Length: 333
Image (tube, rainbow, N blue to C red; front, side, top):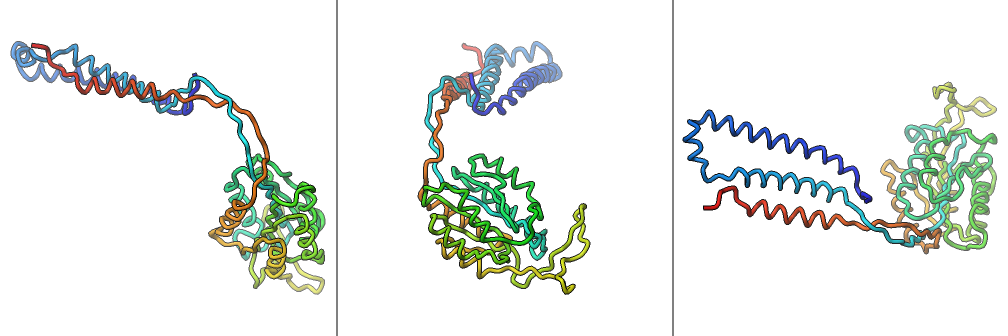
């Protein structure tokens, strides 16, 4: 026998407690009657009371409780083979890991905010393959497209700023890397979610977006940061801020969100641009857009499904409960 919800079997430990309770009540009742009056008088008052029926009713309650616990645990007997088909699209998420993502105009910083957004999006996906790519001056596929969402979130958790050796923000190169990560023959079912502050360093992201459009890749861009800008903190091994990044003239470098470029990238590929918000409403909108897309079959597998048989236990429990309710505790005249 297999159990659908075996956790409820722990409630069987309450059955002995219920039995002890009934024994305690019987002993307490007998003591109370002894205190109440003389034995002959009490015997006459309870002459019509059936001790056997009273015990039988308590046994019925214990049995009903036992059957109800088994019902909650969902006993399953017998199996059948079922074919499961998973349909969805390929969603590749590209995260900017350049040092500018350490700016703290969004708390705790831009990169941590981006990781929170990605984790929330992965939690919303159902049946779609997901992959994670990081980029700075170069690009790297951290997690290839997979149906294992837990694995994707594990790779996401270890992402840090400065992981890639080449500094900068090469959005154009990241888009080209994403194009190469999708199946070349297909001209649909491809989504790229790009999270960055948008400060590209001369890699022509608009031209890369045009190439993505030809390959059927829809790009949704999420801007992390503010237009006003924020200095880029320099962090030591313990995570403490030791200063701020400066240019060759000794001036503090301000990292500003480039919304215009991100809007153009999304517009060219029939996607949409969103600015990261504390409520993360943009994730719901992106998920809804993905949900409207045409799906492809990603996997099929044959699995064994157990048949629920809790109905028999529930039915027997109800019958016994009705018997307990109808049955009296008086002797027949």
